[in-house]
Image 1 (cartoon, rainbow, N blue to C red):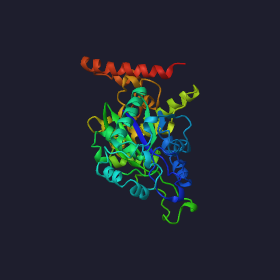
Image 2: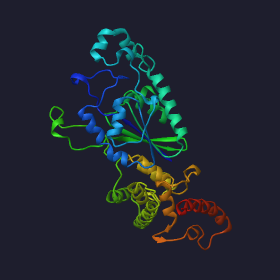
Image 3: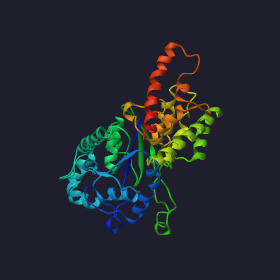
Image 4: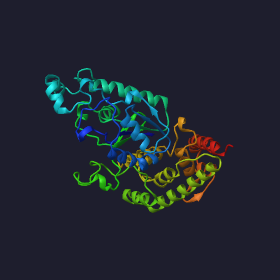
Length: 374
Protein backbone atom coordinates (compact mmCIF):
# COMPACT_ATOMS: atom_id res chain seq x y z
CA UNK A 1 0.00 0.00 0.00
CA UNK A 2 1.01 3.60 -0.51
CA UNK A 3 -0.47 7.06 -0.04
CA UNK A 4 -0.98 9.89 -2.51
CA UNK A 5 -1.66 13.37 -1.17
CA UNK A 6 -3.01 16.06 -3.49
CA UNK A 7 -2.73 19.58 -2.04
CA UNK A 8 -4.09 22.83 -3.35
CA UNK A 9 -1.86 25.91 -3.15
CA UNK A 10 -2.44 28.82 -0.76
CA UNK A 11 -4.38 31.98 -1.56
CA UNK A 12 -2.80 33.99 -4.42
CA UNK A 13 -2.20 37.73 -4.14
CA UNK A 14 -5.12 38.88 -6.31
CA UNK A 15 -4.97 42.57 -7.24
CA UNK A 16 -7.57 44.77 -5.56
CA UNK A 17 -8.69 41.71 -3.55
CA UNK A 18 -10.95 40.71 -6.48
CA UNK A 19 -11.33 37.15 -7.71
CA UNK A 20 -10.05 36.49 -11.22
CA UNK A 21 -10.02 33.62 -13.64
CA UNK A 22 -6.58 32.26 -12.90
CA UNK A 23 -4.93 29.60 -15.02
CA UNK A 24 -1.28 29.67 -16.04
CA UNK A 25 -0.79 33.30 -14.97
CA UNK A 26 1.78 33.43 -12.19
CA UNK A 27 0.82 35.20 -8.99
CA UNK A 28 2.73 34.95 -5.71
CA UNK A 29 0.98 33.95 -2.51
CA UNK A 30 -0.82 36.60 -0.50
CA UNK A 31 0.15 37.17 3.12
CA UNK A 32 -2.77 35.00 4.08
CA UNK A 33 -1.66 32.37 1.55
CA UNK A 34 1.81 32.27 3.08
CA UNK A 35 0.31 31.69 6.51
CA UNK A 36 -1.89 28.92 5.11
CA UNK A 37 1.12 27.26 3.50
CA UNK A 38 3.14 27.38 6.71
CA UNK A 39 0.24 25.69 8.47
CA UNK A 40 0.87 22.64 6.27
CA UNK A 41 4.27 22.00 7.85
CA UNK A 42 3.00 19.56 10.48
CA UNK A 43 1.03 17.63 7.88
CA UNK A 44 3.98 17.32 5.51
CA UNK A 45 6.38 16.34 8.30
CA UNK A 46 3.97 13.57 9.23
CA UNK A 47 4.21 11.89 5.81
CA UNK A 48 7.19 9.52 5.81
CA UNK A 49 9.07 8.09 2.84
CA UNK A 50 7.73 10.75 0.50
CA UNK A 51 8.40 12.08 -2.99
CA UNK A 52 7.26 15.69 -3.34
CA UNK A 53 6.20 17.18 -6.68
CA UNK A 54 4.73 20.56 -7.53
CA UNK A 55 3.04 22.37 -10.37
CA UNK A 56 5.30 24.94 -12.07
CA UNK A 57 3.05 27.85 -11.04
CA UNK A 58 4.63 30.13 -8.43
CA UNK A 59 1.63 29.87 -6.12
CA UNK A 60 2.02 26.08 -5.96
CA UNK A 61 5.82 25.94 -5.75
CA UNK A 62 5.89 28.63 -3.05
CA UNK A 63 3.24 26.77 -1.06
CA UNK A 64 5.57 23.79 -1.18
CA UNK A 65 8.51 25.87 0.02
CA UNK A 66 6.59 27.58 2.83
CA UNK A 67 5.34 24.14 3.91
CA UNK A 68 8.97 23.38 4.71
CA UNK A 69 9.91 21.28 1.66
CA UNK A 70 13.37 21.83 0.21
CA UNK A 71 13.69 18.75 -1.99
CA UNK A 72 10.95 18.64 -4.63
CA UNK A 73 10.41 18.23 -8.36
CA UNK A 74 8.47 20.48 -10.73
CA UNK A 75 6.25 18.73 -13.27
CA UNK A 76 4.43 20.59 -16.03
CA UNK A 77 1.69 17.95 -16.06
CA UNK A 78 0.30 19.23 -12.76
CA UNK A 79 -0.09 22.86 -13.93
CA UNK A 80 -3.50 24.47 -13.55
CA UNK A 81 -5.95 24.20 -16.42
CA UNK A 82 -5.08 26.66 -19.19
CA UNK A 83 -7.64 29.47 -19.39
CA UNK A 84 -6.26 31.10 -22.54
CA UNK A 85 -7.55 34.61 -23.27
CA UNK A 86 -9.50 34.63 -20.01
CA UNK A 87 -6.42 34.24 -17.84
CA UNK A 88 -6.19 37.08 -15.34
CA UNK A 89 -9.57 38.60 -16.20
CA UNK A 90 -12.32 39.19 -13.65
CA UNK A 91 -15.31 36.97 -14.27
CA UNK A 92 -17.61 39.93 -14.89
CA UNK A 93 -15.20 41.07 -17.62
CA UNK A 94 -15.24 37.61 -19.20
CA UNK A 95 -19.05 37.63 -19.34
CA UNK A 96 -19.01 41.00 -21.11
CA UNK A 97 -16.16 40.36 -23.56
CA UNK A 98 -16.89 36.68 -24.34
CA UNK A 99 -20.64 36.18 -23.78
CA UNK A 100 -21.10 33.35 -26.30
CA UNK A 101 -17.97 31.47 -25.30
CA UNK A 102 -18.80 31.89 -21.61
CA UNK A 103 -22.30 30.50 -22.15
CA UNK A 104 -20.98 27.60 -24.26
CA UNK A 105 -18.44 26.64 -21.64
CA UNK A 106 -21.07 26.74 -18.92
CA UNK A 107 -23.23 24.38 -21.00
CA UNK A 108 -20.41 21.83 -21.49
CA UNK A 109 -17.80 22.41 -18.82
CA UNK A 110 -15.99 19.16 -19.53
CA UNK A 111 -15.36 19.62 -23.25
CA UNK A 112 -15.61 23.37 -23.97
CA UNK A 113 -12.45 25.43 -23.55
CA UNK A 114 -11.87 29.18 -23.19
CA UNK A 115 -10.48 30.80 -26.36
CA UNK A 116 -6.87 29.65 -26.64
CA UNK A 117 -7.26 27.60 -23.46
CA UNK A 118 -7.78 24.03 -22.35
CA UNK A 119 -10.91 21.99 -21.63
CA UNK A 120 -11.29 19.97 -18.47
CA UNK A 121 -11.22 16.83 -20.63
CA UNK A 122 -7.78 17.87 -21.88
CA UNK A 123 -6.71 18.74 -18.33
CA UNK A 124 -7.81 15.25 -17.26
CA UNK A 125 -5.72 13.51 -19.93
CA UNK A 126 -2.67 15.65 -19.24
CA UNK A 127 -2.70 15.42 -15.43
CA UNK A 128 -3.63 11.73 -15.39
CA UNK A 129 -0.72 10.96 -17.72
CA UNK A 130 1.60 12.94 -15.43
CA UNK A 131 0.45 11.01 -12.36
CA UNK A 132 0.76 7.66 -14.13
CA UNK A 133 4.31 8.58 -15.12
CA UNK A 134 5.21 9.52 -11.53
CA UNK A 135 3.72 6.29 -10.16
CA UNK A 136 5.81 4.30 -12.62
CA UNK A 137 8.96 6.27 -11.83
CA UNK A 138 8.46 5.86 -8.07
CA UNK A 139 6.95 2.39 -7.50
CA UNK A 140 7.34 2.70 -3.71
CA UNK A 141 6.94 5.45 -1.16
CA UNK A 142 4.26 8.09 -0.70
CA UNK A 143 3.56 10.90 -3.18
CA UNK A 144 2.83 14.51 -2.22
CA UNK A 145 1.65 16.70 -5.11
CA UNK A 146 1.09 20.47 -4.81
CA UNK A 147 -1.33 21.49 -7.51
CA UNK A 148 -4.62 23.31 -8.24
CA UNK A 149 -8.36 23.02 -7.77
CA UNK A 150 -9.11 22.05 -11.37
CA UNK A 151 -6.35 19.45 -11.48
CA UNK A 152 -7.45 18.00 -8.13
CA UNK A 153 -10.97 17.55 -9.48
CA UNK A 154 -9.72 15.68 -12.54
CA UNK A 155 -7.18 13.57 -10.65
CA UNK A 156 -9.88 12.61 -8.19
CA UNK A 157 -11.89 11.22 -11.10
CA UNK A 158 -8.81 9.44 -12.46
CA UNK A 159 -7.87 7.85 -9.14
CA UNK A 160 -11.33 6.80 -8.03
CA UNK A 161 -12.84 6.03 -11.42
CA UNK A 162 -15.64 8.51 -10.73
CA UNK A 163 -17.56 10.44 -13.37
CA UNK A 164 -15.59 13.53 -14.40
CA UNK A 165 -18.64 15.77 -14.63
CA UNK A 166 -19.56 14.81 -11.09
CA UNK A 167 -16.30 16.29 -9.81
CA UNK A 168 -17.22 19.86 -10.78
CA UNK A 169 -19.40 20.29 -7.70
CA UNK A 170 -16.38 19.70 -5.48
CA UNK A 171 -14.50 22.66 -4.09
CA UNK A 172 -11.01 22.34 -2.64
CA UNK A 173 -10.26 25.34 -0.45
CA UNK A 174 -6.78 26.85 -0.37
CA UNK A 175 -4.22 24.52 1.25
CA UNK A 176 -6.71 21.69 1.50
CA UNK A 177 -5.22 18.22 1.05
CA UNK A 178 -6.85 14.92 0.14
CA UNK A 179 -5.13 11.63 0.90
CA UNK A 180 -5.68 8.51 -1.21
CA UNK A 181 -4.68 4.99 -0.19
CA UNK A 182 -3.58 2.75 -3.08
CA UNK A 183 -3.78 -1.02 -2.68
CA UNK A 184 -2.93 -3.20 -5.69
CA UNK A 185 -4.60 -0.86 -8.16
CA UNK A 186 -7.60 -0.06 -5.97
CA UNK A 187 -7.76 3.49 -4.60
CA UNK A 188 -9.57 4.54 -1.42
CA UNK A 189 -10.28 8.24 -0.98
CA UNK A 190 -9.80 9.88 2.39
CA UNK A 191 -11.54 13.00 3.74
CA UNK A 192 -10.42 16.58 3.01
CA UNK A 193 -7.62 17.65 5.34
CA UNK A 194 -7.50 21.30 6.33
CA UNK A 195 -4.94 22.09 9.06
CA UNK A 196 -6.07 24.91 11.31
CA UNK A 197 -4.14 27.41 13.38
CA UNK A 198 -5.04 30.54 15.29
CA UNK A 199 -5.57 33.44 12.90
CA UNK A 200 -3.26 36.43 13.41
CA UNK A 201 -5.03 39.72 14.18
CA UNK A 202 -4.07 41.17 10.81
CA UNK A 203 -6.16 38.49 9.11
CA UNK A 204 -9.28 38.66 11.23
CA UNK A 205 -12.14 41.09 10.80
CA UNK A 206 -14.34 40.89 7.72
CA UNK A 207 -14.05 37.12 7.56
CA UNK A 208 -14.86 36.69 11.22
CA UNK A 209 -11.44 35.29 11.95
CA UNK A 210 -11.87 32.31 9.62
CA UNK A 211 -8.68 31.48 7.78
CA UNK A 212 -9.83 28.26 6.16
CA UNK A 213 -13.00 26.79 4.77
CA UNK A 214 -14.59 23.64 6.21
CA UNK A 215 -12.34 20.60 6.40
CA UNK A 216 -11.45 17.63 8.52
CA UNK A 217 -8.85 18.41 11.14
CA UNK A 218 -6.71 15.32 10.58
CA UNK A 219 -3.63 14.38 8.66
CA UNK A 220 -1.11 15.36 11.33
CA UNK A 221 0.41 12.29 12.99
CA UNK A 222 -1.48 11.24 16.13
CA UNK A 223 0.68 11.29 19.25
CA UNK A 224 0.78 8.45 21.76
CA UNK A 225 -2.34 9.61 23.62
CA UNK A 226 -4.25 10.12 20.38
CA UNK A 227 -3.26 6.63 19.21
CA UNK A 228 -4.67 5.24 22.45
CA UNK A 229 -7.90 7.13 21.77
CA UNK A 230 -8.07 5.66 18.25
CA UNK A 231 -7.57 2.15 19.62
CA UNK A 232 -10.30 2.74 22.16
CA UNK A 233 -12.62 4.19 19.51
CA UNK A 234 -12.18 1.14 17.33
CA UNK A 235 -12.66 -1.22 20.27
CA UNK A 236 -9.26 -2.92 20.16
CA UNK A 237 -9.04 -5.39 23.09
CA UNK A 238 -6.67 -4.53 25.99
CA UNK A 239 -4.30 -7.46 25.35
CA UNK A 240 -3.87 -6.39 21.70
CA UNK A 241 -3.20 -2.82 22.80
CA UNK A 242 -0.46 -4.14 25.12
CA UNK A 243 1.08 -5.96 22.15
CA UNK A 244 0.96 -2.76 20.08
CA UNK A 245 2.80 -0.85 22.82
CA UNK A 246 5.49 -3.54 22.95
CA UNK A 247 5.90 -3.43 19.16
CA UNK A 248 6.15 0.37 19.26
CA UNK A 249 8.95 0.14 21.84
CA UNK A 250 10.78 -2.41 19.69
CA UNK A 251 10.31 -0.27 16.56
CA UNK A 252 11.80 2.79 18.27
CA UNK A 253 14.72 0.65 19.43
CA UNK A 254 15.38 -0.32 15.81
CA UNK A 255 15.18 3.36 14.80
CA UNK A 256 17.78 4.29 17.41
CA UNK A 257 20.16 1.63 16.10
CA UNK A 258 19.65 2.90 12.56
CA UNK A 259 20.37 6.44 13.70
CA UNK A 260 23.73 5.27 15.02
CA UNK A 261 24.47 4.13 11.46
CA UNK A 262 23.48 7.53 10.09
CA UNK A 263 20.05 6.39 8.87
CA UNK A 264 17.36 8.72 10.18
CA UNK A 265 13.71 7.77 9.80
CA UNK A 266 10.49 9.47 10.86
CA UNK A 267 10.26 8.10 14.40
CA UNK A 268 6.91 9.75 15.08
CA UNK A 269 5.41 7.94 12.09
CA UNK A 270 7.04 4.67 13.14
CA UNK A 271 5.69 4.96 16.68
CA UNK A 272 2.16 5.87 15.56
CA UNK A 273 2.00 3.09 12.96
CA UNK A 274 3.36 0.52 15.42
CA UNK A 275 0.85 1.56 18.08
CA UNK A 276 -1.97 1.17 15.54
CA UNK A 277 -0.75 -1.77 13.46
CA UNK A 278 -3.08 -4.33 15.09
CA UNK A 279 -5.96 -1.90 15.53
CA UNK A 280 -8.37 -4.35 13.84
CA UNK A 281 -6.72 -7.56 15.08
CA UNK A 282 -10.03 -9.24 15.85
CA UNK A 283 -11.28 -8.84 12.26
CA UNK A 284 -10.65 -10.91 9.15
CA UNK A 285 -7.82 -9.50 7.02
CA UNK A 286 -7.10 -7.19 9.93
CA UNK A 287 -4.18 -5.37 8.28
CA UNK A 288 -6.36 -4.12 5.41
CA UNK A 289 -9.33 -3.49 7.70
CA UNK A 290 -7.21 -1.32 9.99
CA UNK A 291 -5.68 0.52 7.04
CA UNK A 292 -9.06 1.40 5.54
CA UNK A 293 -10.38 2.56 8.92
CA UNK A 294 -7.39 4.87 9.41
CA UNK A 295 -7.56 6.18 5.85
CA UNK A 296 -11.21 7.11 6.37
CA UNK A 297 -10.00 9.34 9.21
CA UNK A 298 -7.38 11.11 7.12
CA UNK A 299 -4.29 9.06 8.01
CA UNK A 300 -3.41 7.71 4.55
CA UNK A 301 0.36 7.49 5.16
CA UNK A 302 -0.11 5.59 8.42
CA UNK A 303 -2.70 3.39 6.74
CA UNK A 304 -0.14 2.38 4.10
CA UNK A 305 2.23 1.13 6.82
CA UNK A 306 -0.50 -0.66 8.77
CA UNK A 307 -1.83 -2.31 5.62
CA UNK A 308 1.53 -3.92 4.81
CA UNK A 309 2.68 -4.86 8.32
CA UNK A 310 1.89 -8.55 7.87
CA UNK A 311 3.68 -9.09 4.57
CA UNK A 312 5.77 -6.58 2.64
CA UNK A 313 5.47 -6.36 -1.15
CA UNK A 314 8.73 -7.44 -2.73
CA UNK A 315 9.53 -3.90 -3.90
CA UNK A 316 9.23 -2.69 -0.29
CA UNK A 317 12.06 -4.88 0.97
CA UNK A 318 14.25 -1.92 1.87
CA UNK A 319 14.95 0.18 4.95
CA UNK A 320 11.95 2.43 5.60
CA UNK A 321 9.40 3.27 8.27
CA UNK A 322 7.22 0.51 6.86
CA UNK A 323 9.86 -2.21 7.12
CA UNK A 324 10.75 -1.12 10.68
CA UNK A 325 7.17 -1.70 11.82
CA UNK A 326 7.04 -4.97 9.88
CA UNK A 327 10.20 -6.26 11.54
CA UNK A 328 9.39 -5.00 15.05
CA UNK A 329 6.09 -6.89 14.92
CA UNK A 330 7.97 -10.10 14.10
CA UNK A 331 10.29 -9.69 17.09
CA UNK A 332 7.39 -9.47 19.54
CA UNK A 333 4.86 -12.17 20.45
CA UNK A 334 2.28 -10.88 22.84
CA UNK A 335 4.46 -8.55 24.87
CA UNK A 336 7.56 -10.78 24.94
CA UNK A 337 10.66 -10.47 22.78
CA UNK A 338 11.21 -13.50 20.56
CA UNK A 339 13.59 -14.53 17.81
CA UNK A 340 12.33 -14.74 14.26
CA UNK A 341 12.54 -18.53 14.45
CA UNK A 342 10.48 -18.61 17.63
CA UNK A 343 7.97 -16.24 16.08
CA UNK A 344 7.37 -18.35 12.99
CA UNK A 345 8.00 -21.89 14.24
CA UNK A 346 6.35 -22.36 17.62
CA UNK A 347 6.04 -25.91 18.93
CA UNK A 348 3.27 -28.06 17.54
CA UNK A 349 3.22 -26.82 13.94
CA UNK A 350 2.23 -29.36 11.30
CA UNK A 351 4.39 -29.86 8.22
CA UNK A 352 1.89 -27.94 6.08
CA UNK A 353 1.92 -25.08 8.56
CA UNK A 354 5.71 -25.07 8.66
CA UNK A 355 5.81 -24.78 4.86
CA UNK A 356 3.45 -21.81 4.95
CA UNK A 357 5.39 -20.12 7.75
CA UNK A 358 8.72 -20.81 6.01
CA UNK A 359 7.90 -18.34 3.22
CA UNK A 360 7.04 -15.64 5.74
CA UNK A 361 10.09 -16.47 7.83
CA UNK A 362 12.38 -16.17 4.81
CA UNK A 363 11.10 -12.65 4.09
CA UNK A 364 11.55 -11.59 7.72
CA UNK A 365 15.11 -12.88 7.65
CA UNK A 366 15.83 -10.89 4.47
CA UNK A 367 14.45 -7.74 6.04
CA UNK A 368 16.40 -8.31 9.24
CA UNK A 369 19.56 -8.68 7.17
CA UNK A 370 19.09 -5.16 5.82
CA UNK A 371 19.06 -3.74 9.32
CA UNK A 372 22.01 -5.77 10.52
CA UNK A 373 24.38 -4.92 7.66
CA UNK A 374 27.18 -2.38 8.17
